[in-house]
Amino acid sequence: MSGLLGALLPAVPLVAGLVGLLLPPAPRDPGGGDRVRRVAVALGVAGAAGALALAVALLVTVDSPTETSTTWIDLGGLTVTLGVRLDGAAALVAVAVTAVALAVQVYSIGYLRRGPHDDVDHRYPPYAAQISLFTAAMLLVVVAGDLVMLLVGWEVMGLCSYLLIAHDRRLPGAPAAAMKAFLVTRVGDVGFLLGIALLGVSAGSFRIADVLAHDHSGATVTAAGLLLLAGVAGKSAQFPLHTWLPDAMAGPTPISALIHAATMVAAGVYAVTRLYPLFTAAPVTLTVLGVIGSITLLLGALAATAQDDIKRVLAWSTVSQLGYMTGALAVGSPSAALFHLLTHAAFKALLFLAAGAVIHAVGSTLMSEMGGLRRSMPVTFWCTVVGLGALAGLPPLAGFWSKDGVLAVAESAALEGTGPAPSWVGWLVWLAGLVGVAITAWYAGRLLLRAFFGAPRLPLVQPHDPPAVMRWPVLLLAVPAALLGLAGFVGAFADRLRFATVPVAGAEDGLVHIGPGLLLPLALLLVGAGLVWLGWRRDTTADPAGALGPLRPVLASAFRLDDVQHTLVVRPVRALARAARTGDESVVDGAVEGSGRAASGLGAGLAALHRAALPRAAAGVLAGALLIGLAAALMGVTR
Image (cartoon, rainbow, N blue to C red; front, side):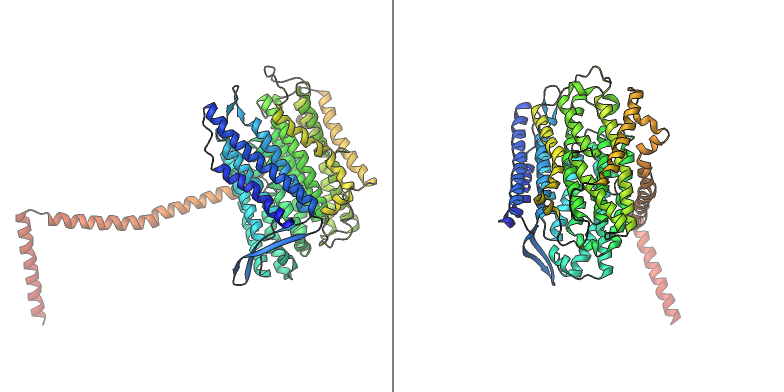
């Protein structure tokens, strides 16, 4: 039964997505558009709801690791299988993915209606279908029992992200952002593909259980782990392949919630937990992951402090929170990483959908054009308070407990050397995480104050809370954003996130840590929140980010890493492409076309001679005969 549920889990949204793609675009006339749109809505919501029901059933039935597989292809002893690999962690992640997907499908019904007359977005049917395919691809990654199947889901997610980010082609930045996301993640995916190939060839099978059980050589597991981390850096927006994620904000806000909360960026973290014994067998890979995660954590937090676009603040916060997850993996605690992944899915989906409600009401994504929304949008305000509190780690909200779990295992790895990586990696992750707490509290407080407090900056706009179809997903997501962290006290929940195959002593003792170690993060949180509050009280009309002074443009551009990549990578590649094009057109095409032109010219010359007038032809014949006779005479004399 578990195997059947696991197989149906990605199949249900896949079928809904494929059927949805067969629907024509909604006609622009209201009557026909509404009919097609209703069918698309029904397919999208039914696919997500069915997947959520299956995920909950899986969570109830799976209490121990389960695996089913059948051989699909056998190429000279190299086996590719079809099957699922299920455990408590997979079931919990599946519930988070499907819950967010359902919230996004329902929320999109109201969000993608345009104009004062509620005109239908005629491209809604492919949009809803692509969300279903996106969900199916992530669920395939979650339940896959074979690395090739995991790779299929991994790549389909990349394709769906490209299509969804570019959904609104009227926005000038959307197609470029979609292409950037696709290309940057493809860079990492090359390494991911090579890592999978290396492991499969070494084990003689791509089945995950076989790959984990095989005794790989040290060089093989190290090389494969580093190659896999390239793919993780791309999908989970880790330094230096993080630059696509903030630009992906050009897509519709519900898609931002889907990508940032439970799909795409979560895939890399989840893939590492799935193959974690391989990484512990090669500590250098975890060392690299710890360094990358720490840089990503601080880079995302600092960049979020100087953004004016509310969605970009949340995007950079996602980059930072992903650094906490990869940091937990680096210090030896996949359960802490997954716990934070689950709470982050709840509060980040809540924040993006709440931000979408604000954008929908105000008509702008810029916080400099908001303000005073607390009274006119009370439901959105309190949901945003819950989401930002969880993001900053305010007790007793969900993010407090999961972030504390990451900091606790990092502290243990630093002070006691319990992690699989060197202790200095623990110090790096711990200190970066503590600094990140203060910075996160600062930019979360700034967002709240700029958007919801003070005087309205667009007096002609009359904002209000969103309609019910948008409001209820936000309200329901506020519940796990507030309370999910308390599940860490429940033994059954914690047991599902523990990995019996991970030989790490001391790091997996529990998800929630109560003790003096909580005081330092709480003090740093108060420092960050207090600083932004004092700056706001000093001048409620000014942006607290003005205190950053000359650092603000540097932080707003995320240390100009986009410019660095453009200079070191994009320009040389374009120059090489231009040179290749010039060589192809001038040398290859020139030789081919020149040969053709020469043959044509010779033929034209001969044709002209054949078309000569009779006197000239007779003279030519006589001249030829004379030349032949002269040649014959000379040959005779020579003999």
